[in-house]
Image 1 (cartoon, rainbow, N blue to C red):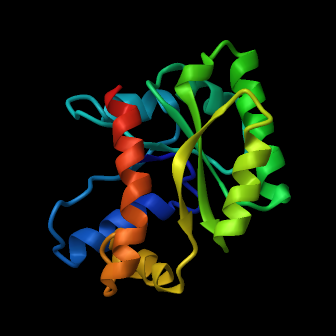
Image 2 (cartoon, rainbow, N blue to C red):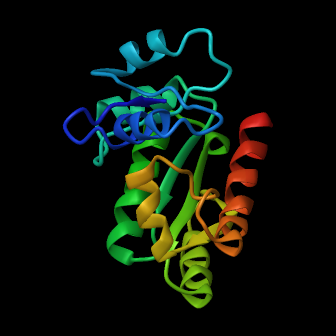
Amino acid sequence: MADLDTQQATSAEWAELRAAAELVQAVEAVEAKSVKEALNLGRGYDVLIIDGRPHANSESIEAAERSNLAIIPTSNSFDDLKPSVNLAHALVDARIPLARIAFALSQVSTEAEAKNAREWLETTDYATLPSHLLYRPSWRRCGEEGTALTETRFQSVNDSARPLFDHITQQINN
């Protein structure tokens, strides 16, 4: 995983916590100052996840150009949905094929809100992954412990996160 947000470095810090906790399936994550550096650091790996900066910029477009899949995470809030769709528009304007862009609904409060967000996204030309992440308070600890959303202390919470990750894996493998 390459973390382009070097000021916050959330992904890189998460991987360090994971390594310190000696959790199985270690994740290598590094801070990268550019997409080019991220790609160089990712050589030799089967999958490279580029965690971009929070706002669309030329690096977002460059990362999407070089990727098999650009997943845009978004919550159900219109304040999040609108800029996410604007990012997708910017990618299409840069000639990224629609088939390589997908939304992932995350931190959704209720099933009804997920349904409403999905219906709104369906009015666009972009794909939305068929599952979503309902917000779970136990996920806050994941960032502090280096665990994945499928590795909490609660099996039902772990099981609720798995479908979205399975859909992402399917998209990558297509």
